[in-house]
Length: 93
Image 1 (tube, rainbow, N blue to C red):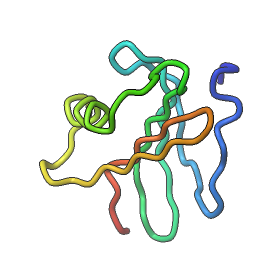
Image 2: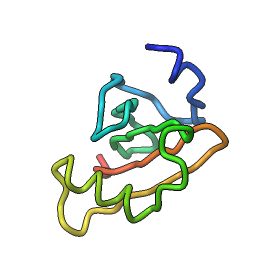
Image 3: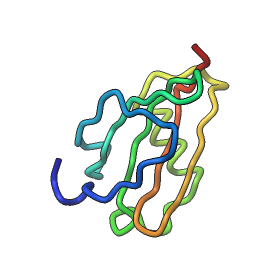
């Protein structure tokens, strides 16, 4: 993994199953598949320096047009000091 994503915080109880740096639109991102508390999901992690003040609505539109999601599927956005994470495709297993 490049130094751009070396310091992505790990959340307690979350096991990252797979991760890969890739591009999404004009952004370099870290894509993750994860498992926590009987839930699996996907995350796309952006560097805040790259996305600035991008709105939650713009992030949601980017995810919905880039990944196969059900129309009513939930999307969760979390911002930290350095990163913005978008969680989606969450389902109980």
